[in-house]
Amino acid sequence: MKKIIYNIEPKDYSNKAIEKWKDLGYSYVEGSWDNYYFFKDFLLVEILIVRLGGMVNKKIIDFFPNLKVILSATTGHNHIDKPTIDKKNIKIITLRGENKFLEKIPSTAELTWGLILNIFRNIHSSNNDVISGNWNRENFKGFQLSNKKIGIVGLGRIGKKVAKYALAFDMKVSYYDPNVFDETYSKVDCIEDLVNTVDILTIHIHADPSNYKFFDKKLISQIKKGTAIVNTSRGEIWDELQIVEALKKNQLAAVATDVIDNETLGYEKSPIWEARFEDNMLITPHIGGASFDA
Image (cartoon, rainbow, N blue to C red):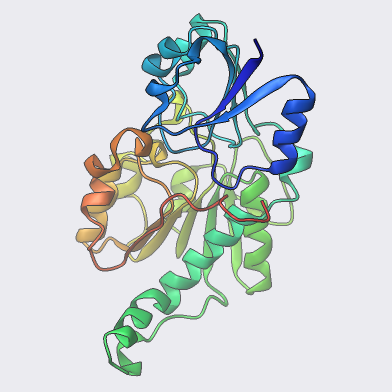
């Protein structure tokens, strides 16, 4: 019998890729997180294709006992229970480290900039007001980006693209990244010196257990009053409860995020999700890399 590749999130999956799998002697099968446990040939599944729709945990691994490879077209790993998978000697293949390929994909950086523009020019809220039948120009005055100070946390692939966009808008760009030195922008060696001097913070660092809640209560308390903050990295990077509190107390002017802590396990439990109706809270459902081009 043929070895099986099971795609648990097949929407818009490449037909060209499917043909390649077949040429390699695999049987390609599509399923979903809701019905995978009805799949009768589970013992033949050697490769599992996932995205961000669910958590690859012990339950999934136990169901496919002959699994050899997990493929995820993402740069993050926090939807994969890596300790459990390591015990089973299952290989994980993601886009992390595929820098030459990823450099061609600006999707997340572009979304970051869309969130920034929304924050400063009230695009989303003014549109909703028009949909409600109003035409209140004076209610939605915003701010220019020109001459504003932007602080970038993590000057990697995405952070550098955001920095480049910022220069095009005549902004003053500073960054914090111990692993990078780029004289094009102003490097700040102490994260506290960044957060208390800029008008907007954008977060672009990988999430792993070593930096979960990097933005903790102490660091958040040092953010300059009136700063806006954008997170298109991962929800685990900041303490969501403290971020929400800072917004409610008007320490933060606005919060925009494309990510929520533990979003694959239950986003409804997230303090960010619970605060989604707050003024100046803008949330998108992890669409940063979800472009047809990418």
